[in-house]
Image (cartoon, rainbow, N blue to C red):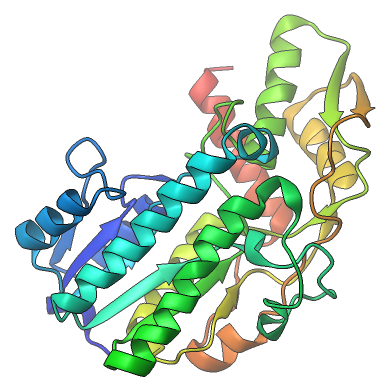
Length: 313
């Protein structure tokens, strides 16, 4: 177990949706030396910037949250960029972490790394049993290379790197940009835009049959901090809430909580994405005592309330 309070901790992506929550939880636990490299100062897909970041910040621990990411639409439009930028960031940060002899590297992967037809619930041992869902495969595979690098570096160099696999996140201060947002913020915005414009319907992608698991962002941040402190093994670890909900049910809930009373139509010319997603979360509970606390409808209402206040409606 590591006492994090006096360690110099770099959180890449620390100004982002998940990162802000991780930084706050570290601060709440008494961590005194937290650095957040900003993309305007350090393009972490470039070797020179990564070298400079390590020289400037001298971390003991790196928590690598930074990612170039988006929903199905963004993944379809940017497969090359999503692959290259995520691959290079991970590879460079871990390599220079190793050469700078840092104590620990915490690599954050993605549920998109799992094969398209993984048996439910997804177990970590199933990660290599097939190809990811096509719309987000470049992103998912680039992030999965962090696991390969992490295990290889532990084997050859004794480098202490761990790999965590969070499920889809949601919560206040999420990204609500329709071009890059994930499903929950995208649907919340769609409902409030329809209310504002007096629209009688909203149109959703696919047929609504796909299922997803969602984890409240504060719960995910707690899991990352616990793993940083307590977990030191090569095996990947799922981070989730252990439930699933269909997109059709999700849209119905969001419409109800946001006050949208119009029709919901499905554009079946658009992809559903992966058919089902639900994680086996037993390893996280066993290895470092993490269990999600926030009930889904409670977290969803808090997210919608936050967005409503942001709109001043």
